[in-house]
Length: 151
Image 1 (tube, one colour):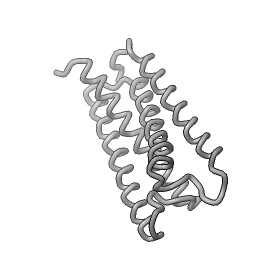
Image 2: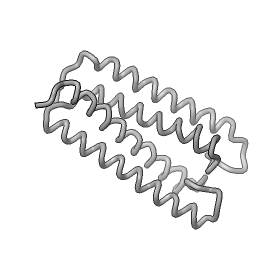
Image 3: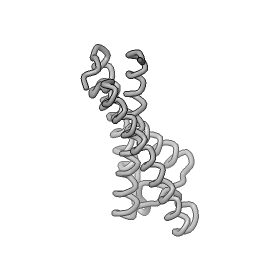
């Protein structure tokens, strides 16, 4: 029998992984594949950019599936705290997006959101949404402190 703190940590880890995978999937599907705004790695040929998108897509898939396996295990053990898990999803989503916006876009410059336009407002919106997701997630996790396992 595991203690409550173990389940609380698992709720955070599971939600965080799912959030990272979910937002990475949305980024890949919308901005890489549907809009063709950029590839994961734009410092070389289009072929290498497409290959890098494949690795990025695989990583997001593994994070999503891994997070859902942990979610299913929490439900099976009656250790799921939905508000805590949902907050962790928001934090994971925001952390990924902020990492992408600050580290990949600005520090490493391996790709930008768009090319051929003034990207200031794109970057601003991208990073503000990331911070809002993180703040909302932390708020949900704090609200869940007194909650017991309900499922």
